[in-house]
Image 1 (cartoon, helix red, strand yellow):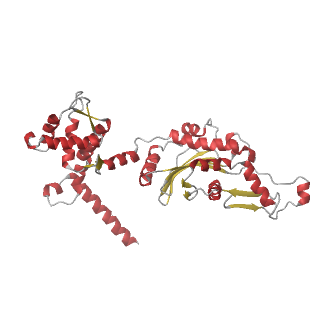
Image 2 (cartoon, rainbow, N blue to C red):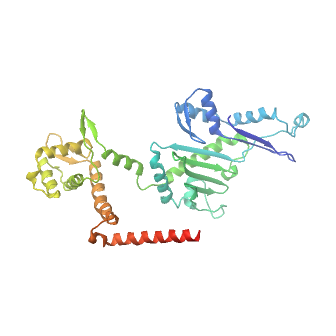
Image 3 (tube, rainbow, N blue to C red):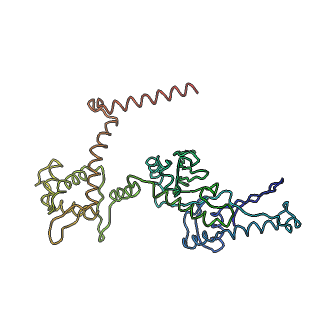
Length: 382
């Protein structure tokens, strides 16, 4: 069963408390069955046989938990001796607290923190009554006890998002910087019209795991930063096709910026564009005449765009058109470069008097000066 504790109260009515952890039980069973796995604190990071792991978790039921209690009651001293048990005095398990956790391991942990912080930022209304009743599938009225609020708790550098319903709680946090943990803790089974005796565990389990899933369904994120980051990084590295190397489309390369700007000129042309048409626009954006760029050079650029999936050839023709990925990439590259990167470069050190006099540069200098002043005052106070 893994680590657990069983403690007895020494005065009437001699109640006792049994606490065990399902994740530790699962780890013990995996070792017993020689199934390779990697632990994640209070959870599983990876497993060689996920179906077997799920089956092990499902097998932890009321019968096994009661069997654990009976085994140790026979071995440990406690208040009820043989005469008491013969008279009908015995321990019966009830559910004081139950936790049901869903751990979703991220394949790109480096972006997990960014993703979770965005989840928090865009779901600050998750604790409102109309949202809570969606998560727990319970009607919330003015008479429903509890405070309906959204709290963002930061312990160290790990933020968490808890939502309360009566005496129960559902919490989300970024676990070990590698997984999204959604955890429902039920402190009173009667919050959901379920009895407290251990045989009600299956019904309570359905409530807990359903609440985890509903929270994920109710939450919203405006954009998928993880997948976007992956697509962006793919464009920054060369690719291999048919044994030949195809160069990357690096964001800060002026020729790449000119090439993607040129592509946007043909978005609304249903017949697409040719090598010659793209070459003329591309040359103009580079400040050259169209004759200075040879058709072979343009064929090289077209092949690079095609291998990266940004354009496609129209069947039975020598014309090309933008793909959906190509349109989004071209707009992202050009807009961010023109509206964010270039204006932001004004804060970098420069010997150009005109650049140093730019409003953004002056604002940054004022902010930097204020920070240094605050640090100096803090040192003096210390």
